[in-house]
Length: 121
Image 1 (tube, one colour):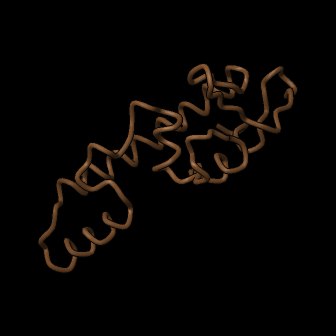
Image 2 (image 1 turned 45 degrees about the vertical axis):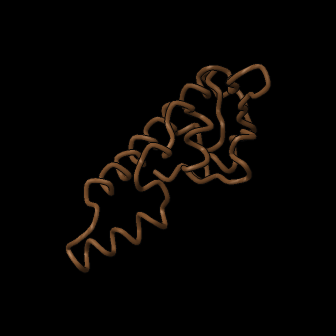
């Protein structure tokens, strides 16, 4: 499942910095998770290192695995956070100055909140 359209159309957080990519969304929604602690922490670098590994057999395989693991785990955690938001009234207070809101909310037939694409989550 590609969460980009869901995030772009229904979630806003000032810490996204105008970007809706995982590297911006993950630390904003899950402050305990970021890419800062990884040797490879950007997609362009990961792509170049993967290419080097594939064509030469030499490259930081373990670092690439850690990067891919963070991406996968990050998507799972973002999906989990979106589900929490939908169930919990569509707002999350991160601290006294930042809140996260999902827009286009409407009551569903069974009293559930329906948030466009999030309704299938």
